[in-house]
Length: 147
Image 1 (cartoon, rainbow, N blue to C red):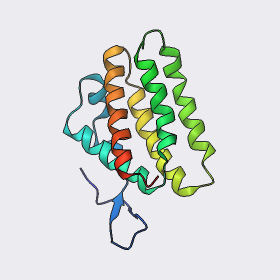
Image 2: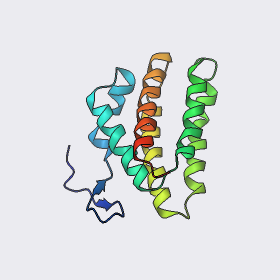
Image 3: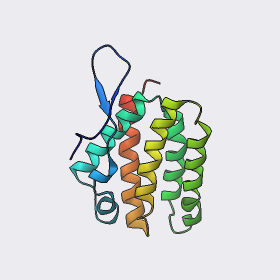
Image 4: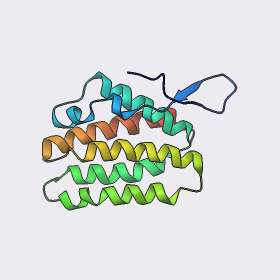
């Protein structure tokens, strides 16, 4: 993965920890959704969640979307329309937080990953793989979130 062109983001602490926004183009999200996750899935989830945590994305913001994702998972075929409507729901969540630049940056990154993964969902199997990616992000976000 090529991070040399990435702009580093300081996490605001004096301990010189720098968090780089992961470039989703460096990852094969389509393969994860259509086939299965691999170690790079976990790497992206961790780096994305850390970036979101540094940018003050709250647990409740992510859990609201994740809760809906899990509800749909129980019966994807019957809830396909609800899944399609999650895309505008995520867009609304991002737009609503535009005034908080840090929070907006983190939420925009979540939306970028969500959109890239969602377009490859076509059936129960791919939806379950999508859920696994989102679950990994939520889990790591809990580790990295400030609140």
